[in-house]
Amino acid sequence: MHTEEEPSQAPVEKIPPRVFVPFPQAMFAQNGCSSCHGDSGEGRGSQNGLPDSILMPNFQDVRSFRHGSDKASIIRSIQYGIPGTYMKSYSHLRRTEIEALAEQIIRLRKTNPSF
Image 1 (cartoon, rainbow, N blue to C red):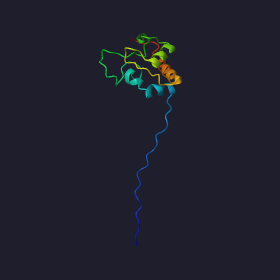
Image 2: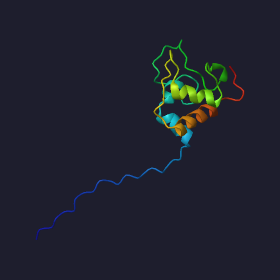
Image 3: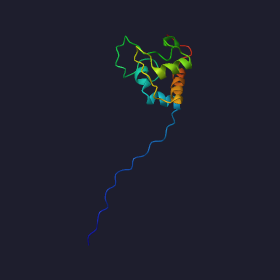
Image 4: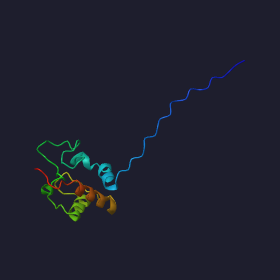
């Protein structure tokens, strides 16, 4: 009598739990902002490839904003970019996405920076 062996089954991988990321924070991550500006906005991203002497704006300190630190100015900088700098235009994003990015940049500010 011939018995067939049951095929071995691969172990079932557990699906990780869902993690909720607020929209502004998700937009910051998805658009690569942290690669130049750093995860916490300190201006030292891991992928900017620039010499240490060239700093990206530090979102934690409004004094480093050269084109305005209010929401409208930040939106303009995101939408149109900043000519003559490494900041490119993100005009392909929807208005709500650009506003979310501006909100995240504002959230990264330190209330009392120790600079």
